[in-house]
Structure formats: structure tokens, C-alpha cells
Length: 116
Length: 111
Image (spheres, rainbow over the protein chains, first blue to last red):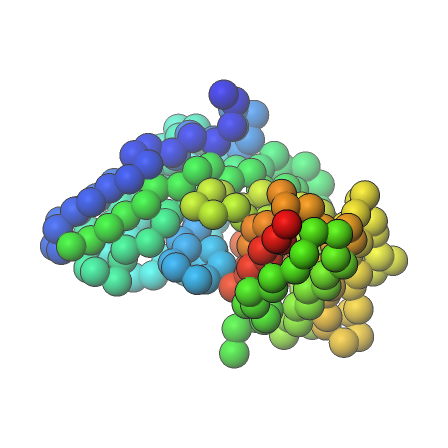
């Protein structure tokens, strides 16, 4: 499968614990995005990378959220001191650089987080 | 006010029916417009881009009215397999490459 992959697919944790999710983009894609989707809502943008540079992070939900893409390939999203309100689907997407402001973003299957 | 507004539905239609979804966006600087489809518990997938001149892809027709900041999607001859949530999506230069999604409109096509 050459699509975007995410790991784990499901995560159940207790409030206060830290969690980390991984995203592997399509191999030739240098842009990588993280979104969060809660029940009944559309995905909400969190942050994005071009290669290893994090070019937008002001929309991360709080300082408990952080993301990295150390070698410009896979990325991780960490949530520290999880809260019940963090329960959601965390989606990763990737795209090619191309020209213009937009190139199609391909989404991974998501990581479903449940905070007890 | 959310940047992208959609009627959440649900829309329940019989097979073969024509159904139309509408969407409005608030940022006049928006540059790119799309419809994504999301099946239950799956990731969103691009259905089609939307252009000012209107565009068609088989049974699907998308229209954009920049003056009214309004986007539409028309599905003709609905199939059972069209049952999904349809997400209206907008991108603008101010938000970099972030996609701004509406809540989605749920469609159920029944036999």
C-alpha cells in the first residue's frame, strides 16, 4: 500500500497520560499536515510541514500539542497530559509541492484517540 | 461564525433521485474550493475541485458563485454507493495550505 499510513489506528489512554502518534506520508510528498476531527464535525487543521520545517503551528490547540518531522519523512504528533476533550480522530495528510497554493492532500486512515 | 457553513442534513433520498448540497464561506479571500467525500469511520477523499465556470464529473456537478460566496454540489441519478458525508472545503492564501472544512452533509440513498 503506497498511501498515507498512521499508527496506531486506535489508542485508549487515561487522562493525564502522554500519547504519540506517527504518520508516514506518501514517499514523494514533501508536505505533511495534521488535522483533528471530532464527532459530527469536519476535520480541523492543526499544523503542517514542508520537508522538516514546521511552517504553521499557531493552530495547534494548546501547548500540550506538539509535532515533529525530524528528517522530512515521517512525522509524530504528541499530546501531553491528555484530557477527555482530546478524544477525537487525528488525521494526517500529505501532498506534493507543485505550483500554486494547493495540491491535493491525501489523507491517512487516522488514529482514533479515546481518553478515559 | 465558522468559515465554512453547510446544512448537516441528513438527506434521505431514493435511488435515482437528484440531490443538491449547498455551502457558504465567509472569507472573501478564499482561493480554492473542493468537495470531499467521507465514508463512515474512514478518511476524507477528494471528490472534485470547484471552479467558477462550474465543472462536471459524471453524475456530479459543482458550482461556485464568488459574489455570493456560495458553493454547490449536485448529484444526479443517486446510487446506493453515494451514501456518505460530503464535506465542503475551502483554502485561502491567508491560511497557508490549511484546508477549512465544513461540518459535512450526510447523504443516505435508499433502495
